[in-house]
Each structure stands twice: as C-alpha cells, then as structure tokens.
Image (cartoon, rainbow, N blue to C red; front, side, top):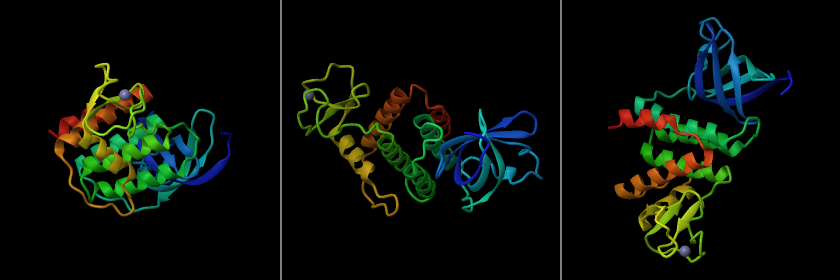
Length: 244
Ligand SMILES: [Zn+2]
C-alpha cells in the first residue's frame, strides 16, 4: 500500500509490544482484509486511542498505508468490548490465529470479518468448543479449503458409515481406500462437521453433541489446519494448559 490514509472497521487479531512505546498489531478489516500496523505511542495513555489496541477489540480506525506495515492514525471503539473470561480469550485466540494463518494481507473478504464478529459474540453465550469448531469449518470453506465430506476422495463412492480423513487429500476416505495413514473419522464426527459447517451464526439452533465426536472433529480440524497453513497453532498450547 502507498501512503494513503483510509478508514475501516477492524477486529484486532494479535498485539505485541514494539520498541519502547509502540504496539504492533495484526487485524482483520471489513474492507481491506488482513492488515498489520504499528500504533506509535500506544503504550502511553495519551496516544490517539492506542490503549484500545487490545486483542479482539472492534474498532473504527484510520490507518495510513506503508511499505512494510501501515500506521494507526486514530481509532475508536465501534462495538463495546464484552467481558471475556480467560477461557473465552483462549478460544478467541484460536480463531484469530487461524484467520491470520489462512488469509493474505489486503485481500478483502467481508464474510470473514462478519464471521469474526459473530464468533466473538457467540463465544460468550454458547458452548465455546462448538463455536470454535464451527468457526474453523466456515473459515476453511471461505478460504477455499472446504473438506470433501460426502464422497471418498480416492474412489468417489458415497460415504455412509465410519470412514477416515486424509489431511493430504482434503477430505474423507472410505474403508477400502484407506492406506492406514489417514485419521479415523466416525459417522457421528462427519455428521457433526456437516452440521457445524452450515450452522447459522446469526440464529444458531440447539442440538445434542456426543463428546467423542466433538473431540475427534477438533483433532482432525486442527491437523488439517496445520497441514494447510504449514504453521503450528500456537494458541492451542495455551488452551490445553488452562482447560485441563
Ligand atoms: Zn474409496
């Protein structure tokens, strides 16, 4: 981006301290996609809204394009921050990291911005594990990595019962085609994933979930994400430490 100022709605994905007084942040914006920027002086109270640069804050921001990263000129809250307990913060971090790893800078995709907005609200109201898994399913689909769940990715036979999931082939593999390298993927897990892909975040329906299916789906999704992005999901380690 050239040195052009622009206004956008942003959701902060990650923040770290930068030099002595500044903050570096990665956000996902409504109209510009993923953007990283420096908020100069943000660690001092008097800066132009710099104290608002916190993980998962939703802001209306004015930024100036730069060669390596943009610069925050000013910002204000666009949505009042909700109080989040440590578990909600940890789950939000998993979604934020997945968004950061799966998207390119300045590649606008408003549906991802809306997904983030809705997921942050739902995390405070519903089963956090389900919200995260559903958000990741939707995110994979928005980023063009929608796993094939209806038919075997090798022989194309329709899958009915228990099967396997191949992270390499990006979908299910039937019993006959399994080479032993795939992950087990029970019929309940597959049905749960289909349901969570389509879950309406604006008006989520209630349903019963088997713990074993959810656990298998989480493990499969996390492995698939890591395979697709070639990056570990660092936030999962923190989550594992606090949710024992
Ligand atoms: Zn097959």
